[in-house]
Length: 91
Image (cartoon, rainbow, N blue to C red; front, side):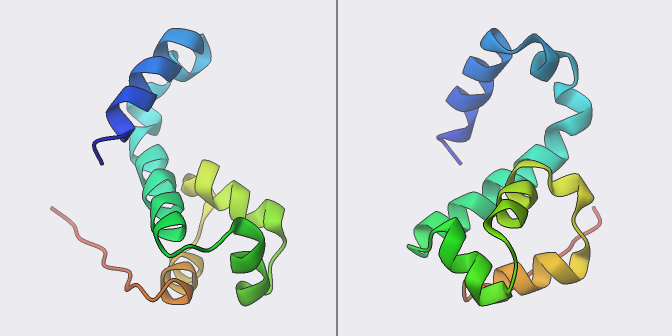
């Protein structure tokens, strides 16, 4: 996730609202970034993934940008469509 840190720093500098809520929203943001990265690494567009999951492209975008609103079953389907496995850990 080496490319995440520069993005966060840039976004904090240019978006005051993002900076104010960063700490509380970081976990959801991180999930969204991981989902988007996994999709991109699989070489699948949001539109293609939406078709595979029988969803709208806007739903895929929302999942990647607002992961706090996503159910576990949806995350599992998302991961499976990319050939990945969802693992949840309480630490």
